[in-house]
Length: 348
Image (cartoon, rainbow, N blue to C red; front, side, top):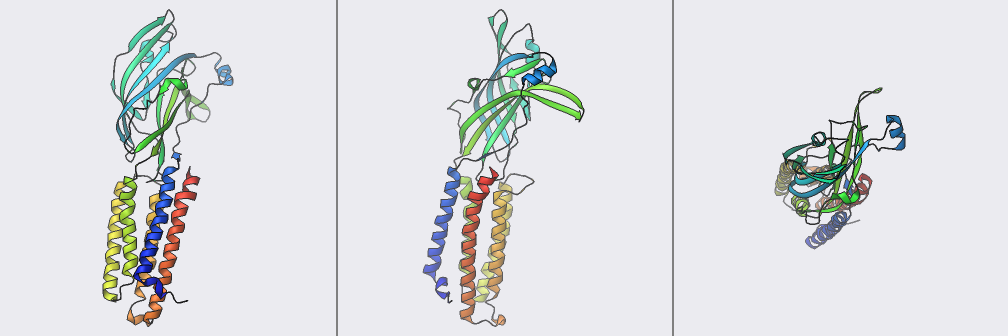
């Protein structure tokens, strides 16, 4: 079948615009979909069986946490800085304020901590409140970068007491993330807290310690397409320019442009790596870069067909290039659909 019509400028412009429209549609749908990734540390529940094993009911301390504001919110570098308020309602005869105040956050540092603001609610119930500035990191999953939603975790514990003695209780209404909390480029979808205890073991048959623990989490949705456009727009421009350069009749100029495109792609790969999180697994952007690398290799090989030493007629060269470009366009659409639909759904 003669495909020389496909290498005309109107056909190429139409194909480019159509493919761009389809790809924009795929990415737009993926941004609308909420797929938060992330797995927090395990929190063991205090069940009747656990209490029976301990031999007594632990003292329950009512706990609340107000995430007042994010001072720094850098998902790519996994670096967060917040102002928050932590409070406890407790029985002073069962646990001292000094012991209670030795709380800490795993994977986090308390940069500022006020003195406890203490109120006596009754003869056997006191209220203590702390104003905090906390810098922390979380266990983030970047599998879908750069169109990833996240679960961000903050773990509260107290290494000075055993879970058998003290357990933090957090009601849903006592973990507050106000609506005024602003995250540029992100939207706070939901938040929750899981209270219980954590268990550290030195060996399989020896329990070292059990500490009370609360896992605070927030689910955030990416709403800013700026980073996505910054990464993908130059990449797709290189791709389309590569394809257009195939249909230049001057073989020498054709190869110069293709070689320049390859160098630009390799340089841009370094730029993308600098913008990406440092992880030990493949992300969505990595698979996309590998696809373009394979596509450029195929198109580069086909460009060589235009050499007069290959013995192909101009008509056959045009036909080969047209079919190859059509195949690459189809492959691009299929890969984009897979990455933004099947791969994203399975990753979540």
